[in-house]
Length: 202
Image (cartoon, rainbow, N blue to C red; front, side):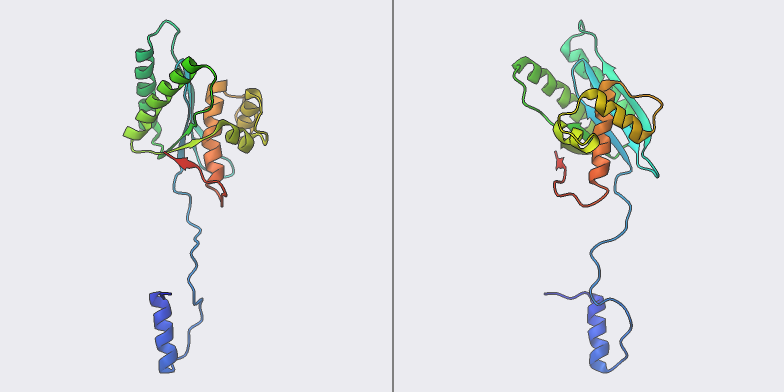
């Protein structure tokens, strides 16, 4: 087992007979440094309505910086929807400078077409976050509901109301934006202390 430079100096003093100074022999591995990420972007991807939310960690409660839904009309081609998602997320990232992105993990879908559309929107969202150099994590929808509401099968309205309470908002956010903010809040909770199930980085 190796020793630190401080421990080596203590040993030299003991061998030479010098008085031992008070202090811990083994240096702690833990520190009270602030969280690495202070501004968090959450994304709930969907081809026709991608929700996003940006929060800043603060006391006594996180602060809302931005929220919204990137809406695409049914008549708009899929390729144009993807461009719009990338462009609007880029603008939000430049404006608020988040350093980490949390996106909803893929879930099982019985409808193949729905899964493909979700995957395309998710890919566009990941592109916007990755090109900005953000660290990116994914969290399963059930885990988000468990963290925010305390029940993994909670309804969207319950999630929105808890997001409203946690961010001290005058009214609940729109459903897609609420889900995105819930992702950001979940990441903030998981990184505020020791977690048995750390988020998956992608």
